[in-house]
Length: 83
Length: 113
Image (cartoon, rainbow over all chains, first blue to last red; front, top):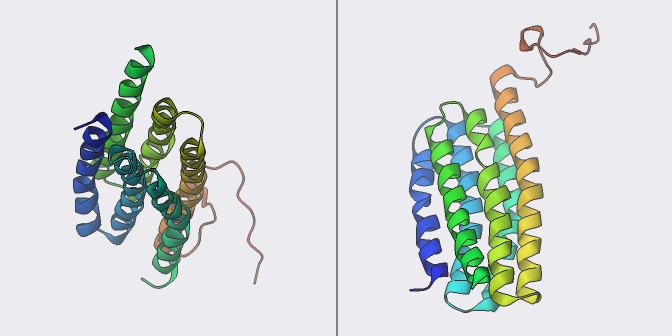
């Protein structure tokens, strides 16, 4: 196991508190958990890309980073007006 | 040898910043407090990840994409956190203008109906 995969395991375990944030408590707290999970998964995709030596797959992380803002703004808008 | 140590330290700092961000957001009671902890993985984590990627792959397409990812995360996190905090306030008060008890220096006068 190389250092990239070791770091990806460590970052992947951070998704456990995120899951707790998303699944319990008030809706505002769940939104914070969702935004944090998106950021952590982006970092995780980069680490896995380099850990498995599949460099073209870094485009997945780039795409996710671009789409994160739109996704979170949609949820924020619904939270503000409709939920 | 030194670059290998810096590479390992950068990856360790990425993991550490992600853990501090996740645990901090998890432990905070107020959602606005939890929002502040998003800055750790997006700021420190992404920057240290850029250092690790550049040390591993050199200056190439992968490093350029990693720099783009880091810049996007830093900018969009600021926008997203501000929008989320504004939504929390609007949801609570039905407006986001400052109130007298908020202690801000300037409170705009609302037009009289």
